[in-house]
Length: 153
Image (tube, rainbow, N blue to C red; front, side):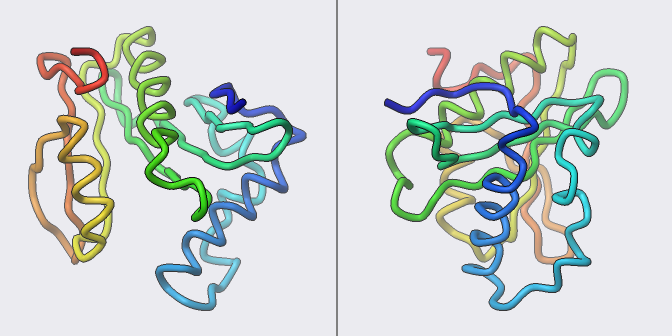
């Protein structure tokens, strides 16, 4: 059974590996120096939130929330193990982040993804995020307090 829970320090290596594997799947070989936030997730998200999908001790999904102002949080590092995609884990992780953001009083949640990643763009569309703009090859989205996420309907 998969449990969605807050990150613990002993999740560090598995969460980092999962995220890097997802990035390498999209971009090919990576320079680890370009993803320094992954070296210490607890520190990187000290003021935000970082959640994992834990399947009997195996980390199969991640999602983080960074504070971007007094009322805005940015969703980042959403990654699901390839063999576990389309099973509702991304939706469950985002539901936890949105709930945590609301508890913090954040009125807006933003996210961006590479515009050519049609599966990721469709995922955020399905969840009720509103496309705001394209910039440098990235599709930007926003889920304001007035918008009801799909999982809450």
